[in-house]
Structures are given as C-alpha cells and as structure tokens.
Length: 296
Image (tube, one colour):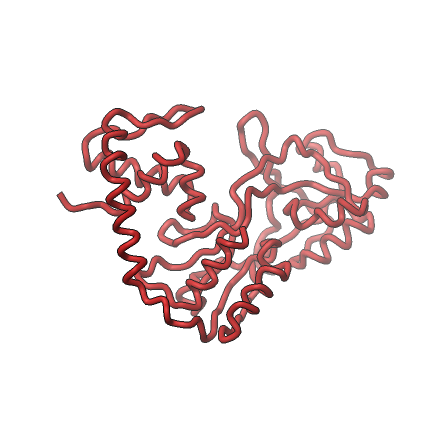
C-alpha cells in the first residue's frame, strides 16, 4: 500500500491536539479540509481512526495504535528533511502580495515593517484589493484573505485569531433614531453599505442566531468601496454600518462608534496568508511564512 504522507500528517495533528480546529490552525488549512483528509485516510484503510462527537474528539483503538507507531517515525523524517534542506539561500527579490483591505493585522504596519527590517534584500509589493482572482495567474507570490474564501488546494497560514463582524453606529445617530434590537429591524434604519468593486452588489450583512447563520440584504442610503469613507460617514452620524470588529476597534475605544446587535455576531476563522502548494518555496516566501508564524 502506497504511503499517504499528507493523510498521516493530518491524522497526527488531530491525534496530538484532540481537535480538528486546533489541527487546522496548526497546519494552516481550513477545518473542512482536515475533516476531508481524515475521511479519505479512513476510507483508504477501511477502519475508523477517530471518534467524533459534537463535544470531543478521541482516537479509536486502531487509531491509538497507529498514532503510537507512526508519530516517532514521522518526527525522524522531519529531522532528516530539515537537515537536508538548504538553509544558506538568503531571501531576496520581489515579493508580490495581494491583501484584503480588511486584513487589519497584516496591513496595519508593524508586521510588514518587521519583515522588511529582517529581510533587506526582499522588495515587497503589496496590492490591497478585495477582488477575487487567481493569484498565480496574476503573478502574485501569496495573498491574505479570510479563510472561508480560500481555495482548498492552497496552503494557508493563520495571520490572525478568530474574527468577528459587527454592527456599529455613532452616538449621535443612536440618539436621533434609536438602536435596532434585532437584525430584521435594520430595514427601518439608515445604513451605510460597502462593496468591493463598482460593478458588484453591496455586501450582505451576516448574522447568527441559535446556531443558524443567515444574512440580511440591507438597502443602504450610502454605498462605497472605500472602507475609510464608510467609517468616517458612520462616525459623523450618517447611519449604521457593518464590518470587521478589528477595523472598528479604535473608533469604539474612543467613543466615536458604539457596537450594536453583538449577540447576533458570532466569531469565525480569521485571515490567512495563502499560496500555491509547491514542493519548494522560494526563500523570500519561506521567510515571510516564518515571520508570520513568529508574529502570531
């Protein structure tokens, strides 16, 4: 039987952490990708390796036996590969990145400044965009986006922890028009919408309630593709708006904006640095991956 090293690596990550979510974060992939890989490995072997419930993850008897025998062997393989890798190639050249405008932690400054300082021979070219496209076809080395929209054939490294979208409004707006108590009441309020590009529909506002996720198509009085115009308009009392909690945090802390409907805004997987699944990473990209891992 041919060895499924990918499946074994994913199995070990789940077995060590007793969590699909923690394994996904460690491997830099999505939780569904971990589940699918484990399922393929179990189907290939014809036995169950992991017991799953809504509250826990445990190994079956066969899974425990496999874990005890395989883990030391894989650790030795990793050491051998590390020793054989060429560590002398200094990162250099142009590193092109396509980054979402709402990836606040990545584009706020310190992360990239620290990377540039540690790698002076690398030229960093960052395009901030929310358009969906093939980063490989467009000549980018990597991108940064929310994990839920990254193709499963990409390698993904966490850049942030869990994120949350939230509804906010200025105190002046709330004083004049009051607060909505449920997302369904947003249709009765002035809303400020955001769209990623001129020819696309305004972003639908996403909520969660009693374990059910749904979205609300508000009818914005003001729509823009500029996040900062949206925020400034909201701070001026122009209406209620919706976006990443991390983006609004400075304005909430200063009292310019007030969070609304928080109980309907559940957390979700955050941002990931993603790139094609290549056998050998260019030193410049490997250096960025290592920097992001240390930064977290």
